[in-house]
Image (cartoon, rainbow, N blue to C red; front, side, top):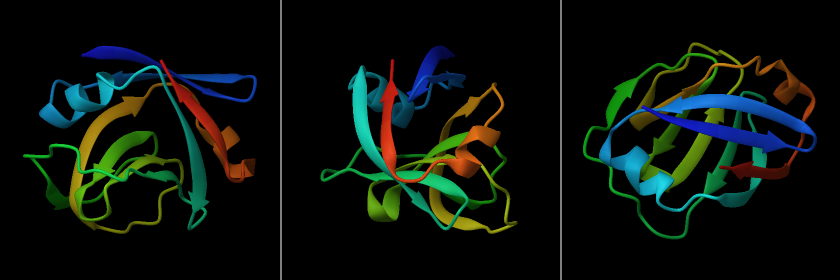
Length: 114
């Protein structure tokens, strides 16, 4: 596990990233500042222009606080609201251990990963 700090404005969220090849590929890009969009009022999303390795993708649900990579759209996501949806080609790369409720009031914004 790798500890990651996610900064949004003045707020900091703490996350643990797993040891998957996808998580490692993302960690190699850190520190990373991304212009993330608030999508479907359930997730913050960033679309990478290039593919990131993802060998363990599956169709699954998610938990509030999960950080994932959606292989189909090269998207890096932070899930902050549960809708019960099952998503295909999803690789969970980490989980935020802090309260994610602040994301309910955040629109599109820059997010920094360290």
